[in-house]
Image 1 (cartoon, rainbow, N blue to C red):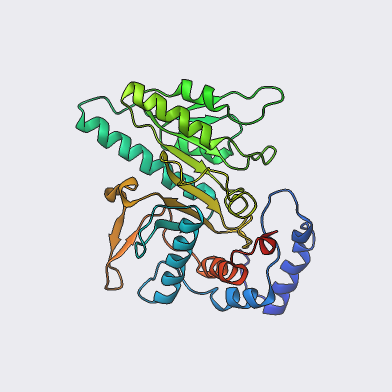
Image 2: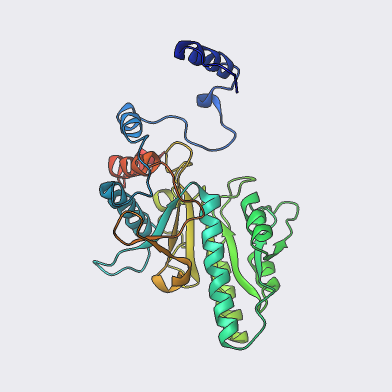
Length: 312
């Protein structure tokens, strides 16, 4: 930090000149992240750039827009909701945070069940394919869960459902399926995984669930492949994450995690704060964050609607 201040024009010019050495976001095809939005949405984003999303009492309409997004996405994923029932979910800074939250919910539910049964609950594991994104490895390492990976083989670059179910044991908190592999974009066979796991659960008396990491495919499959069963139509799918900043067509910084029902999100993981007066439930890894991306996601959902061509 310099000893003295400089004119604002000089500060701008120094930074602007350095940033010219960055790549052009419009030419970045490497990370699947949205780099262009309509001018009308850009204005909404800039108008909300100074809103702290966590101040729900101060910005109740922004909170309502997030809740509407959660409900629309839950219906898109065929959540079994009643006509006036609110969906269970939350906006995050991306699918990485969403996966952390979903994983914590699975771990806590498994621990509670094991405690009630008087069984050890200190060695949880999770089953994935070796093609998972690094956030799954982060979850396993940060929250002390053994990661059991199904190895890939030549010509088959996603998780084999049969081999995944073979790795499941009484300590498995969930099996994670990928809808849109980072390696090649391929969808894993969630339907087959569900059917095989249903049979294993019947044989063993376990109730091992499924999480679907739909970071890439969650905003593609409902429009291009509406008959494909990968979502809450399958009984063992208890939670789904999706990246709003990928094919949700929003700038980087927004993801979503949706739970099948309230029973799938342990109440003790939800904090209730009242810093501004009213009770505010919160389940996130961070606290303060901007409101712009939530508003931008709502813009895209109501702007584009269900018309398939708009999402392509």
